[in-house]
Image (tube, rainbow, N blue to C red; front, top):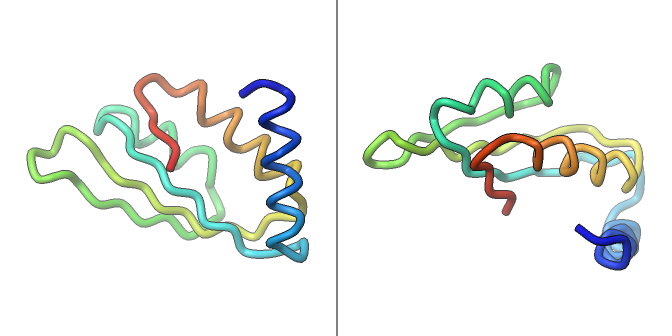
Length: 87
């Protein structure tokens, strides 16, 4: 994400949420990388669902987040995981 996109996303988050708030993250990740995603959200509610062929896992996380900056930081960390798709 470039800085303009991050600023726009931050603005939208701040309009839609009163921090702290529960934020839902959604990812699709290769099955071999699911542990890397769940490690980012150790104390949060994580749901996993395998694709029909088992190659990919859909990961939904509900996390109590303190600010839009924390949301952005989580997405930046997640982006480092090979093959991840953020929804």
